[in-house]
Amino acid sequence: MRKKVKYFNMVLMNSLFFIFFFQGTLVEAGNNLITVYPVLPTNQIDKKLSYFDLKVKPGDEQKLDLILQNNDTKDKNLELEINPATTGASGNIVYTATNESKEKDTKVMTLPDIAKVKPKLKVKAGEEKKVTIEMKVPNTSFEGIILGGINIKEEAEKNEEVTTNAGLSPKFSHSIAIQLREGDKLPDPNIELKDVSAISEYGKNRVTLQLENTTPVLIDHLTYQAFVRKVGSKEVLIHEEQKDYRLAPNSMFDFKMDWNQDEIKAGHYLLNLVVTENKIKKDWSFEKEFIVSEEDANKFNAESVNAIRKKKKTKIIVVILVLVISALVAVTIYLFLKSSKKKSGRS
Picture 1 (tube, helix red, strand yellow):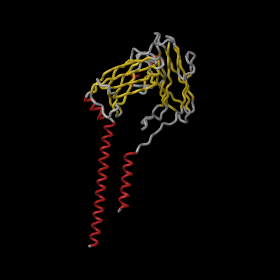
Picture 2 (picture 1 turned 60 degrees about the horizontal axis):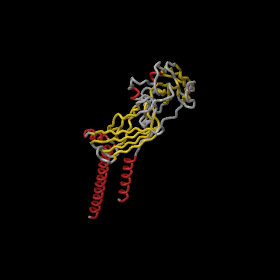
Picture 3 (picture 1 turned 120 degrees about the vertical axis):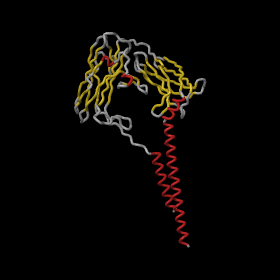
Picture 4 (picture 1 turned 90 degrees about the vertical axis):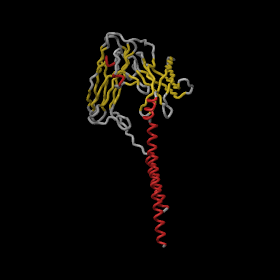
């Protein structure tokens, strides 16, 4: 009897281990087998760079060349696209198509206004091909820099799953920056805080700060120091610091902070933010109040990972209790029947 009970306990423990610790496998993207490099022209400002950094004049017409080498044993169908530079979620510069790049401000001149490229290209296995970007600078002078890039990616086949479970794409994708300027002197950088709000994103409660670089210059070496308190309180609810961020010219950026508490509470909050450009030692200081309504707080909390985990944990506990009670009942019945047989045998 003891051996059977011991065996049952072992099976139960292994089942619980499987429930709590099982994880799916990750799928990694393969190695890139396509190389891309720019042919730097004579008006390249810094010839040590691996991207186009060009001095241009109003009305200039120019062709920029890239060399693509397909080192794979298979032919490659590629898509090519000229995009303006935008600021990514981690404070990096992005040259792929984004919602921001599609929602163009007609007052701001961007690289797609100036540069064009054929959108499709087939490169045979082992073949080297030249890609030509045709560029026409407007007759009207522009201030600062125009920053963008060419994005080259492998065309997805029909019914093909582009993104894996790990969030990685197995397809080739590469960007080369194109930076244009007419003068040597650049305008002073400026950053504005547009909005502050609480949000629920990817199962997490967050505070998002919408910032804008209102100038046609790339702002580097940025440090963000942000604090959130309840209005009238000195207690810091959220403190976030990030270093070495960048802001693309004339771009928006959402700086996001996780809500440290398990639940976000309705109320009136105050944000204090200091953004520092560490190279030129320039600071921008902001103070802004925002409100979290009761309705939003309830909605965000219901969507948060913590709430989902609590629900899942409750379900697991219920399942475990049912299994344990069932096992105890089965063991009790077994012992009772065994004892009854012994008594009947003696009589």
